[in-house]
Image (tube, rainbow, N blue to C red):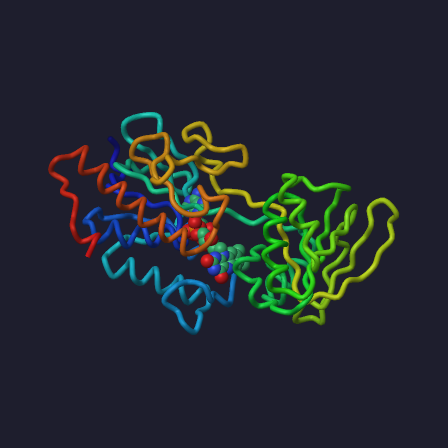
Amino acid sequence: MSDTIEKVKCLIIGSGPAGYTAAIYAARANMSPVLYQGTQPGGQLTTTNEVENFPGYPEGVTGPEMMMQLQAQAQRFEADIRDGWITKVDFSGDVHKVWVNEEKEIHCDTVIISTGASAKYLGLDSEQKYLKLGGGVSACAVCDGFFYRNQEVVIVGAGDSACEEAHYLSKLCKKVTMLVRRDEFRASKIMATRVKNTENIEILFNTETDEVLGDGQVVTGVRVINNKTNEKHEIEATGFFVAIGHKPNTDIFKGFLELDETGYIINTPGTSKTNIEGVFVSGDAADHVYRQAVTAAGTGCMAALDAERYLAAKDATFEVSTSSYN
Ligand SMILES: Cc1cc2nc3c(=O)[nH]c(=O)nc-3n(C[C@H](O)[C@H](O)[C@H](O)COP(=O)(O)OP(=O)(O)OC[C@H]3O[C@@H](n4cnc5c(N)ncnc54)[C@H](O)[C@@H]3O)c2cc1C
């Protein structure tokens, strides 16, 4: 083994709520975790100003503030938090190999994957402008719908998730306009029917977003275009929701881990275990259903406990700590 190879008991990839929670538990269980933050230290929540649904913050908290607190909590127990991007893995042998920034090689007893998923956006300049301003563009109805109570919103998408999010919004908002690019939904019949039967959801088929309109600070409407007639018109709205899917950040695991057709890592139900022993997954990288900070944190805890038990079973000298449960 060359000098440049580091040996690590527990390597955590990703610094969102899943990764940091795994680090807190692993550090308190004497697993000396090393966590690589990736290009988005703190994960997806660092892109939002208001988190009102994470337990323990009665007044709400900004995403960056919450993630700094999670990092500090992990560091309090001496988790080793590092800059770096995992560019390659090799899970084919007994030792799990991971490369950082294409250079540094690490051999790991256990790996916890917490690489999250990225929401897809349309890519319009106006959409990105108001997304970055926090001014009314969102890819998460459950996270942000509450801020649009009794207001009019537009949602783009045609799949099951889009239908579910539109239905969720319809219970909070005065009116939901749903833009569907084709002349039919991609969603299952039952989901499409539920949306069609909801009084305050208007569905515009063959309709695409031409521009997100705003006053420079916040969204005020959406200009849409009918892709059959090329006619354009404007819809008043204070919120613009994009529900066209997510891309899990799991490309580097292809060929080693079982992924579903979208790229989510498949875990053994009720656990964080993957098809490779000693490799565990937590957070949005394996979750196309809930995609919330609290569920990511919960599965981060599961991954650390599963990794701890795996180590204990493999190595009689490594004792399962009781500290995880205190
Ligand atoms: C705008 C917005 C607002 C939201 N608001 C809320 C809300 O109010 N409440 C709520 O519960 N949820 C909210 N969510 C959802 C929530 O952010 C996610 O469910 C949660 O962050 C998922 O956590 P995670 O740890 O799985 O992954 P993420 O937060 O996505 O973090 C992934 C981490 O992995 C790292 N990474 C990825 N690939 C690599 C690699 N190859 N090497 C090293 N590191 C890597 C990234 O740098 C990042 O640190 C919101 C999401 C968005 C986008």
